[in-house]
Image (cartoon, rainbow, N blue to C red):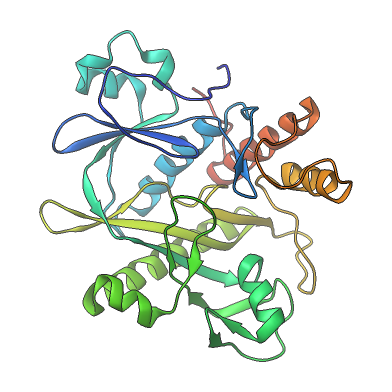
Length: 304
């Protein structure tokens, strides 16, 4: 499969995000197509990462299969032949959707990200190190970077069209979606994270944190939507060698971030668009990280 910078399909295009195109199939169904675009520090790189979109789609599909008895989800199919049979207008476009497209039930998304943190890292660690808080709320004193959080912390965020999502309190989440809905989303997010953490741990991966999105279906049910526990929505750490008190290696875009950090410190990039041209070895190393995460979690290499 060649790298994809995006798709053009004979369906109404509803949205084009940093990674995905969202197409309308009909009043009840959407088609999500994941490109190989990649962003870092809120800037989309010019070079795609081969197989990244397929990893995001097929890993999400695998997780939806693991979680089916725990939470309802929006996936109808991520199999290209099944999608072509269900959506005849896509005839002749198999190459554009193979591996990277997911046919989904349509929902009304809740306007919050449901983040669950099993370890303190990333933006949570930065705030804690500075003030001992997360979203302004006090956390236990004496935590080290990458320390395990027991129990995990539910840490909602607002969804940003551009830039970073903003961590918010659960109280603010209740104001946005309602108290009953907030409680339901927290319960579901915690349950999914707990199941995912157990499955990943058995495969030598720690899920440091992850974010979920949920939507309300036409029948009133709450569905897990978008993607599920991928290298884009989660931090995966190798269990081997884990030690609190430092930053951990991860199965995501770390090679890309590391290289961009060097470019910024050297004054060759100011952090804004346009980004610098990525060396072929950075592209290859980043692609390898995504494929390795898929293989480790599912137990098999990605096959399309």
